[in-house]
Every structure is written in structure tokens, then in C-alpha cells.
Amino acid sequence: MIRSAHIDTFARDHLPPREQWPEFLFDLPDVRYPERLNCVTAFLDDWLAAGHGERHCLISPAERLSYAALAERVNRIANALTRDLGMVPGNRVLLRGPNSPMMVAAYFAVIRAGGVVIATMPLLRAKEIAFPVTKAQIRLALCDVRLADEMEKARPLAPMLDRVVHWGSGAADSLEAIMAKPGYEHFAACDTASDDVCLIAFTSGTTGVPKGTMHFHRDMLAICDTFGKHVLRADRDDRFIGSPPIAFTFGLGGLVLFPLRIGAAAILLEQAAPDDLLAAIERLRATVCFTAPTAYRAMLGKLAGRDVSWLRKCVSAGETLPAATFEAWAAATGIRIIDGIGSTEMLHIFLSAREEETRAGATGKPIPGYQARVIDAVGRDTPAGVAGRLVVRGPTGCRYLDDERQAEYVQHGWNVTGDTYIKDADGYFHFQARSDDMIISAGYNIAGPEVEAILLTHPAVAECGVVGAPDADRGYIVKAYVVLKPGFAGDAALTRALQEHVKSNVAPYKYPRAIEYVSILPRTETGKLQRFELRRRAAASAAAASKLAS
Image (tube, rainbow, N blue to C red; front, side, top):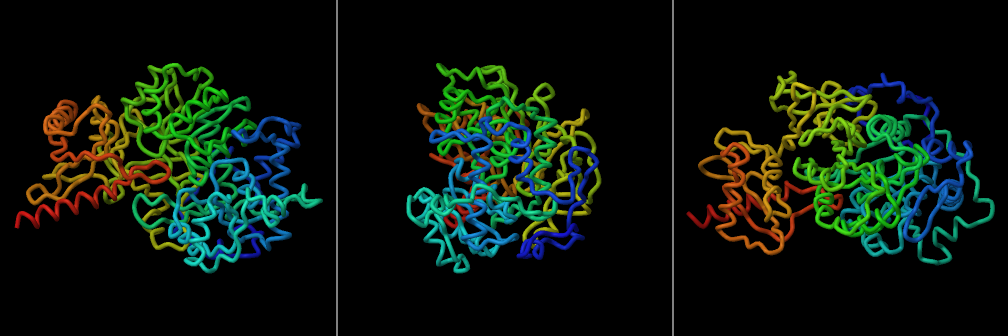
């Protein structure tokens, strides 16, 4: 390891043992960085040095900041952190706020001062906030005053949190008041090592207890210089927009790191539902959009009368992109969505394809700098067309914060993503399911998301989730939880129609033998379907039915 700048060595002390790290690849010249590196210099200082300080950087409904204005705000917060709030290099700092210029400035200030950011989703409740505070032993938090209630409720659950400083309150002890002191406009970036931890991102909890994923300064640049440079290929005149919170690494990359790495501008929306997103794309002339498949599907029905002609690139991640949504969006806008799969462990996207190389229903290929394989139960590569576990390695990789699950995610130097994939004869990777979403029914392997994709092509279906439900005869059956579009009734006739629809599009054994109509599906704040919750419901229903029958 390179000499660390961290005085507080907690992060480095709680990295996994080196023998449990994945193998990192630096064959791509773009991801070879100097030993001493503070990543904020690449996102801000380099643009000021190049004379681009007055270019638009962050745009929100409330304010617009140039690169120079953002840099000054970052410096002022960094001074407040180190001079007034007692932060030293290596300290972890919790951030709570919606997507806003202040949230980005606080994020960069912690890193510039040598700290480690832990950003949290705005909608988290006290218990969910207390978990990362306790796990990462956080003593200081910066919080938007509008989120103060849950922050205060979390404090008794995490007594090590000594101080919470709010912004937006107008109080004498607010962050704005502290950072406004004379002489705080300049701050020399901490002389961090390229492999000093600067971010601990917690997983969204789709599979249970969140895990803290630890990322280095070099990782923040690596995702920009792989996916951003070689697949997305945006330019400095672009305006990025999207829905994911920047506390989610999909949002961090798409709405902060990617645009600032190339000197472009980011549009930050505190509310980014499909209606909000479309309105902002039109009003603010956004050109690059990052959001989830469900949002693209929802926006399809709202495009009439909207001017989205400035939009030229769209990126989808978080869940697999159904072919029907890809094709419908291309037909309506002329834009081929760039699909991708990433993970919090890998920081961002590692499988994707450029627009001109995309194929409906396929995620893509390993992006430059990464390698991927599909393997069987004993680690051998599967033949083309045969499903197996997706494993990947590249310049980023999994390093869990003090977590025994490190040995499950990293095996033989490869990151085992937990996804089941097929690699076709042309080298394209096709998502089948999360490995624990594969339904085994009467000896057949059935990928729940495949059935979901078919159901979504039926005119009655707005959303759906498909899981395995315990069954005495078949082990498991396919069960679909369906949200209907207005005007449709979830009766026996529609159930039969949906079942026949699936049978007519895929192998008949894959059809959902049970369909339950619901008003809403359980999702994480980042929009991911919580299939583990649907599996829990399905198991509870099956147990209740079995008890009643006996």
C-alpha cells in the first residue's frame, strides 16, 4: 500500500484481509493514476487551472453554480470541517440531503479534506440511519435541515454520533454561518494516497442487511475513465439529468462524477418522478439522462406535447431493461437506451454497450478495463447460451467494511456479482435473474425477471414482480405480483389472459401459476424491486394456505 494520509486509520484498519481482495486490472492506460491523488482536484481544480472556472457546473431549481463557485463552496466547507468541527483525515462524515448543489459541495469537501463520505438516502428512517453510523463509527454528520427529524431520532440509537450540523436553517450555528468566515475561500486539498478510502457506500438492502462498500480516490476516477469515456462518450457541452439519489452510486456517477470529469454541467432535482423529470428535461434542455427502466416506461405515456429534442443519450441501470421498453423508447424518441449493470461493490457500470452496438434484451459486453465471465457451480466457463454466475474484475472491486460476506463476493480474485447470465455466441451478456431469483419449479430453472418482461408487454400491466412461491407438489411455483393500469380489473378472466399471454411468448412451463394483484410493489428508495420481500410474502401466503388446508 501507498503511504496513507489518514490520521484516523479506522477505514484502512477495517478493510478486508488482502488475500480476500479481488484482483485489480490496470491494463487500460486510462486507469493508471499517480500514487498521490485527491480525486476532487480532477473534478474541480483541473478545470479552474484550464480556465474553465466560469462554465456552468451545477444547475438546480434554486441556484446555478459555476465551477469556480462550486470550488469556493467546497473550500469553505472543508475549512469549516477542519477548523471548526474537528475533522481530521480519515474521519467518516455522514451526509443527509436531497440532490442539490449543497449536497455535492459537502460531498466533495469531506473528500478534499481527507475524510470519508457516507451519504444516505433522504427517505431513510432513524433505524436505517443509525446502522451506517454505528457500523462506520461516525461522529459527525452534515444534514439538510428539512431532514432533521429522522436525524435526531437516530442519535439515541447511535450514541457515538457527537455532532450534527445542519444547512438551510439560517441559524447562527448552521453550516452556512460557519463556512462564511473570512479566509475560508481557499483550502489546499489533503495529500491523500490514490488508495486511501474516500467513500463508504452502503448497499440498498435488496438482499437483507446492508453492506458497506469501501472505495478509493482512484476508483472515483476509474468509473469515469472506463464507462464514462469509452461507452457513454458525452462531452463538455452536455447537461446531465436523472432520478437516482447521489447517495446511490448510480446517481453519484451519472449526476456528479461523469459530468464533472469532462467539464460538463449537472442538473440536480430534489423531486425526480417521471413528470418532474420530463418537465426538467424540456425546461433546462438536458441532453443526457440517467434513470431506471420503470421511469423510462412511465415517461413513454407522457411524451405527448413534450419537447425532449435536446435529449441525445439515455442510460438505464438498477434493474434489467426489458426489450419492450428499449424498443418503445427508441421508436418514440429515436434514442437507443444504453443499458448497463453495475453494483455498489464495483461502484458503477461494468457491462454495457455503446448506443450503436446495443441489442434489445442484452445488457452488453464488458466495458474497456473490465473482464467478465459466466461460470458454473465449480468455476468453469459455461458454453455460449448456458446460464451461469456472472463474475467480473477490473480497476474497481469489492472491499466490504468489516464483513464476513467478503469471502462470498470475492472468489479466486473475481467479484461474484450474484447475477445469473447467459453469454451468447457474439459475446453479449444477457441477464437472466439475480442468482437467488432463479425459480426452480418441478426441475425447471425459471428466471423471474424473464417472466416479468413478458407480463410487462401486456396492455393491462403497469408493474410486476415475479418470485417463487413454495408448493407441495412442484417445490416452487411461479407467482406474479401485478400492479394494473387504470381501467383494468384483477379478476379471474384477466388472470387467465395474463397466463396465456406468458405461455404464448415463452416456454409454457414458465407461466405464473399464481397471480396476486397489488396496488404497489415494494421497492428500495433507489427504485429496485425488493424481491426478497415478495418471496417473504409468497412464503407466508403458502404457509397460511397449508395450515388452513390441514
